Length: 176
Image (cartoon, rainbow, N blue to C red; front, side, top):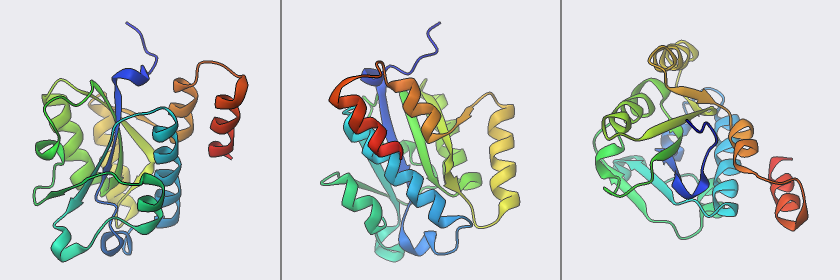
């Protein structure tokens, strides 16, 4: 089995990173900063990008920091906790997952993606919950169920093939 991330078979999913929800998330700044970083990397590697919004008519839209780097990407409205039902049938095999809340929408989405025979990679530094114990328990549960919890930087280094040229320089500028 190949453990490397194949970018041609990978997409990025951002779950419910809306200002109204983010305002109560512990470590909000880190979650947003890492989400912005992975969006920039997704664009560099030409990964499909999916953005879910939980009941946006009540909770507002995705935060401006992410929208500024994401560009003109459709945002998918949902009223379920899992984002899986709103994703297209032909999404790639590997899904990089970030967003909020770890123990609710992220967790349920991850399990539903697995039911669709997808491989979720949870970006542990780009997820969060209102309180630390729910965040930690959500991560522990997923990890016990053999879901890979990793970081934005670890995934980035998995995707890059060579340490040379203009592409590599742009890659490094995103990680700084």
